Image (cartoon, rainbow, N blue to C red; front, side, top):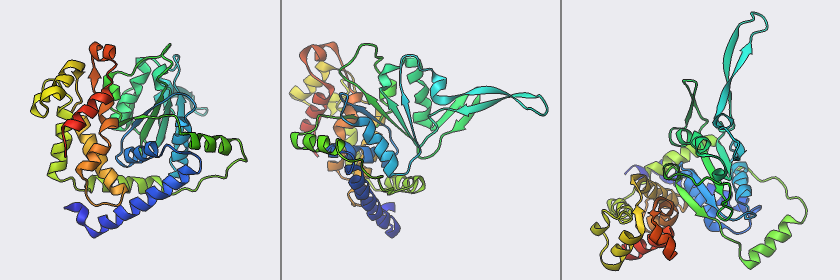
Length: 338
């Protein structure tokens, strides 16, 4: 297999060391949230995008800004508002006149999406038309304007935030856009000890700049490495089984009894093939981040909830019964063992 190449094995060790340095640097500014940081690094080295959901004040924005600083990535932030237009995200053509010849021509002025890391802050506060401006960029890493296609800088990642408790004046993301995000990460309140440390750290003296532990070119090299990490056949089969078990029409292939009934009762639509791809790719990245040369079933299961939960569309019966998509993914995980 490709990842048994000695050079690749050395790169895996380098990735592990770089990731540890990044964790330590991020930890100088972000207290706790170790699981969120881990998933953020998995998304980055898998060349994926991530959606962060949590109440205000949990340092979601600060975490993403800190990641960009530590990895030396070009960073832009867009505050999504109801009056934001697609051209405010992607850029627009402006009419210019040559002062010598008087000739007029259009020039494309790049929007803030032209960055290595784009923070889409409160993405659900802007109408669907503007949300859709991100779709092509997230999938194809390019923007089309006035018939011309413009490549985005590489690497390119969209990390978006969403407030789950203030729904007035918001526009829920459509399933097609949610599916573009590799992970949806639930950012929770810190523990008591962490909260004390957060207050102490943020009300004291200003902290020094963080070290830069990677570069865009090195990140691209490590992202290519992650794709070369082997995923044995049983790992791929397990990932596909988990995804297919979330679909009411194919649940019987993998689940029986109460678990199958539960999926059929509460799910309208299950996860699509992109979920299987992200489970395997994320498993490869998790293995490499831990210095292991091959992905395992445990790697797949460790990221199943943030990969699958936002892709499982529950019905009204589930909402009335207080059943969440994450609960149904746990049902699948409990029923299908490695």
